[in-house]
Length: 276
Image (cartoon, rainbow, N blue to C red; front, side, top):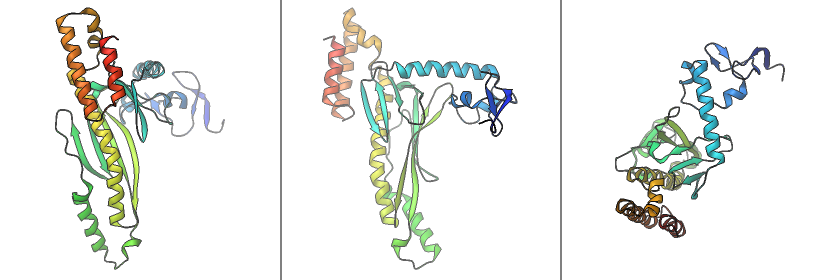
């Protein structure tokens, strides 16, 4: 351990030894691996930080960890990773084995998403627009693949043209330190063009489910569903509060009918809104 840690150059944040190689530097001074591992911010942002910026970020991350530990989920949805959702407070996060402190987002933080297949962006959605899902079979990528195979010239048997890519979904969000967050990276492959595109289509069915859920959460934020004021309205008994509860029930019913939430989740939410 001593070979890779320089105790003579202490971390300016916690005082521990810093890496001898490839250390993250703030104002030209290296920080320790432990402090560095707590950082979760857009690439390039950290390079411009002062020590004060770093301390503010670490405090922000500590508060985020408390949110994760005290999170009250109303449902959990699995899309490669588990997506934990609190409909009442309009919060969500993604469980990950590489992060013990994954960022907690608000529904209202969602601004869009990008889907990439290999190096190609195959779909982009922004908040407020209608979604046009990527259709693998009809996309020009297939034609491009065929053309490249032809240009390669070989009269190879189709089965020898093994293909491999990653299908990535990146969430676009509006938070102080993150504006993009990778939701999933799914391997797609095939021994030939047809098998490859068939696998893309299979994996896209999972991705589409996730993307439709993100859009539904964004719409919930716009419509004010599940806010504390809405659920507290039953107790106040005012006309405005009652109308809010009715509107919330209607929206949750629509989510159930669209398959976003189950009948059991709808019933639980209805009882919560009605205070029964």
